[in-house]
Image 1 (spheres, rainbow, N blue to C red):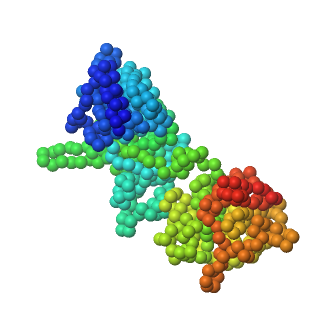
Image 2 (image 1 turned 60 degrees about the vertical axis):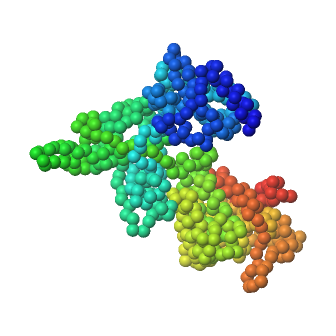
Image 3 (image 1 turned 90 degrees about the horizontal axis):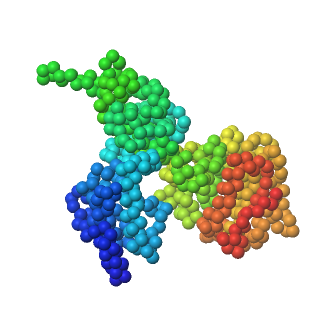
Length: 567
């Protein structure tokens, strides 16, 4: 701390010589952060010269300095600069992106000088309009800076043309301060609300239809506040198509705009023409000459209702395209690919979670067992799921993360399904067996061989301590015998226990009937399903389309694990 005081003393002297600085005491009109006494170790008032004019800036040095950047603000006397690119409503000047730039802790004075110089350049270019293009880059920040009327969840898929959307009023649900949920259709929005668990008993959720409007350009240096403003703002886009969709919508109508996959929304309000006759006030709630719910949007925005205020909303995108693009490489799997998962135990639960994480969307999951205490250590379900059907508990876990998923559950015995519901196996693109039951695996493989099952099957199982895991993909195109893969070779099962020939002594048993189990740890499961998930992704993209066998081995330790193709 003594060193930091010496550093600050030196910085203070240099700032005084260069900018005639002095210590700054916050005033009532400053933003709350600038007034936080426990956040700053020093605040300086600077006098800087820009184009022969002296401007006052406030440099705040946090207690975490020099490991974090100082912050710089415009003094209240120069509030007219608010609204220039990179200057927000709190008079804060955004100089460096903290996610990209890192302060040089060995040059504290240089950190301060760079912040000040960058602020001067931002003001200079803003006044001269040299950084006008930055309005586009930071438009959403400006949109949110002004007083907004609410926040919206959007699961609408980005599209290149105007389309109708469904707007759900979720204010009564009091979910994270969101006002509306917007979806491509009623069914999608209704399913999202149901799957996410945010609906409440007795609460009615109303919905109306709005408009999705992609834009290629706009007058980004203004923040629209009225119908005429929004018309001016959107000039240069396909307004004729927008008007066609707006004409048959009753007000208020919400419009979701998309600029380069950044979304924001505004609401057109009901026009009220107030006519007073003596003490009596008449309210005409629709455009003259048009029936209620019918209007000419072009006249509404530029003529009789041009001064009508709009409502502005911030939008959080919850659609999969946005989440996966933000979270990594985007969606690299076939979104229409449907998977049947038979077995929701340790391997099945971790595999489903991984498949969801890489972008698969459509599942049927099957398990006729209930989740128990014994499953806790190596399963993604938790104590709240005890005595629930595994398939249902697992579905609910997935919905909490991705409510947009399509998951159907079955609690039937798989053998019963082969008798009563063989179509289930043929209505998916891939049937995955995570059962560890040779007889059932053999039954399913024979049904494939006899063409009762027409879609490929993938059989997965693991060896004790997960020293190895196995992946057998069978398709009718070049089917080989699953039974032959398990024939004895030199006294050992050829594939099932290739690395643990003494499996009978490795399996463990607790007191009680049917208590034998195979020991393996969660960290090994995670490594194994990562490899398996990649192979399933290759199957979905048709890069693997022939029957094959792979083996995963742990090696000396988990860091040496590998997957090798055997057939």
